[in-house]
Amino acid sequence: MDQGFPAQHTTTTTVTTTSTTTLTSIRFDPSYIKTLPGMLKVAQVVLNLLGFICITVTSHSNFSRGAWFNTVAMGGFWFTGILLVFYLFHIVEKFSKIPWLKIELTFCVLWTIFYMLAASLAAGYAKYVEAFGAAAFFGFCAMVAYGYDAWLKFHASRSGALAQGQHTPKQVSTVASPAY
Image (cartoon, rainbow, N blue to C red; front, side, top):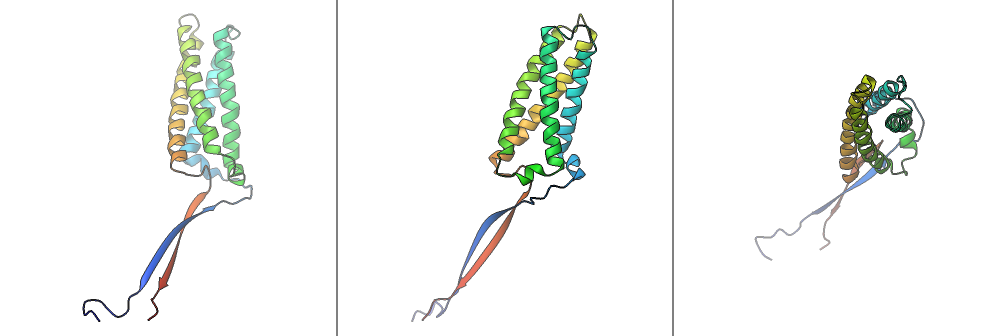
């Protein structure tokens, strides 16, 4: 027998697996609003509504620029508002099989582009109607909010994160001793 090698040795194998933990009960959780995605959604809903009001109170709201801005604002208001309710009541977590992050990423990218166009058109008409200038300001703010949200969703979906819920790592260790 070789003096440098012990007569017995132990082999330890550690396997790390990840399990997904989601609760399927619908419950109200106001703490979501304190998270960055929650604050972004609230800001987006408010900016959509403020921009819509600015255009609607003018007598020029039926012009194509105003109508396009209001279409973008109300589309964003309703979609983002419904998503906010889904997150507040953990409906997203209940239906975790739906690719929420990819849906939100697509929506946020589209609304960033739509708001860039709508706010630019409103800003071009601001020299005639002051309310269009205010709407353009809120539109550009909404564009930034949706763009940042899209960036966050892109990185979250790329890393394999869940929209709501969590991945829980589990470690399983096995010890095997060779039989002599």
